[in-house]
Length: 314
Image 1 (cartoon, helix red, strand yellow):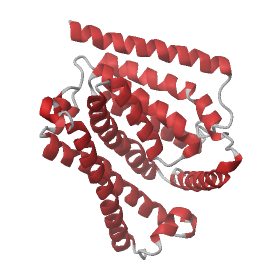
Image 2 (cartoon, one colour):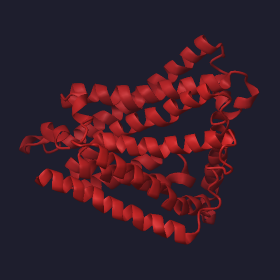
Image 3 (spheres, rainbow, N blue to C red):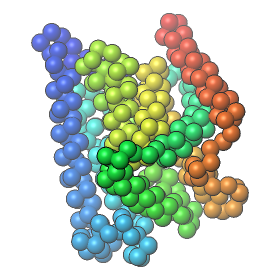
């Protein structure tokens, strides 16, 4: 985890992490607009929609035949550009590192991979009570305008997500798994943990500050107020998986499990193989179940941390 910071050490370069963060922010903002606008143009060419129609695809997709493929293309193209292409460009041009330095795999990887999977399963169940609490937050009167906006935004995103995750075929499910689970797992971890967390940790000379600040940015970035706290906790978990192991690959694996397992369960539910809705967060598991998985997850995190401490000291 130190490799990324080797060019930011030294007395005269004590401000380098902040400068690099500003440059990275500029790159990401520019990439967001550039790749999004380019995706709109390509969508109009490939799928035959007018550019002026495309914003309405997001709000009323059911009214436009072929909207699913167009929206998936926009999301994939924009995400790859913003979260994968831009960080890789930054890594090569500003940090003068190779991408493989971020994607190291632990020696004897089976045990840490297995522990990571179990940690994520425990976290997803324990986090359900936080999800339910966050969804039911009531704003004070002076924030009523913000509350109305946040509720409308949440409802709009919920309807869009429901539309995109109603899989008419296995091929559509596999495409969604790549776009909704694989690409974010690789790209968002590369940006938020690989770059932002490391640079913030160096800037503050404190890894815990770097982990929680990058987790906060990760949660806010999704622009879903009624899910921001669970996402911040999720981002912090990924941050500690990376910090303790030194392997961004394990954080990516955890991210993929969080997104991918939900999609897999949802697809099995649509096939009527499962008889419950995995997206239903209105009724979390009983408190004793959450308590068991919380302490189980904490024990696994302790085991995960000790495993890598012993590996480094060996």
